[in-house]
Image 1: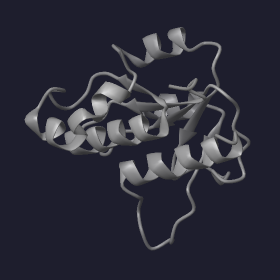
Image 2: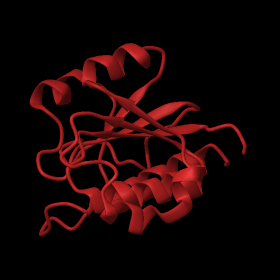
Image 3: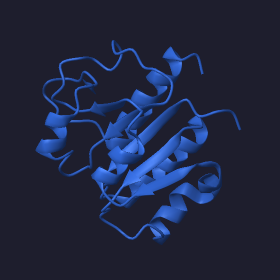
Image 4: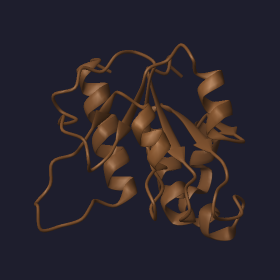
Length: 152
């Protein structure tokens, strides 16, 4: 496997099917997946197994017990928050090697404090009549653009 150039991070995910599908995305795109606890389900549920099948063998997953631990362990990396509230389009942002693309959970996004803490924020432009994309779609779109910019 080649060196991982982009990292995906999920903040307290709460839908197992989405997390499982993101494992597939991370495996196929050769990115590292960071999962920040607490998570809203038991990780080894059968639902997850049906979706990720053997892809988990090809995905580097790292769990963090808290957002604080995540920040401490990634102090040298740039963290980019994907949020519907950002002014900058994900496609206009300049990604760098080892960036971490952070996605909030499906129900609540990220905490207000975390939102205010992260200076690098991007959005995926959408029809203003809709609320948001599915988390898996957002992860796929954002990660693909970052990898495209890095010529991976």
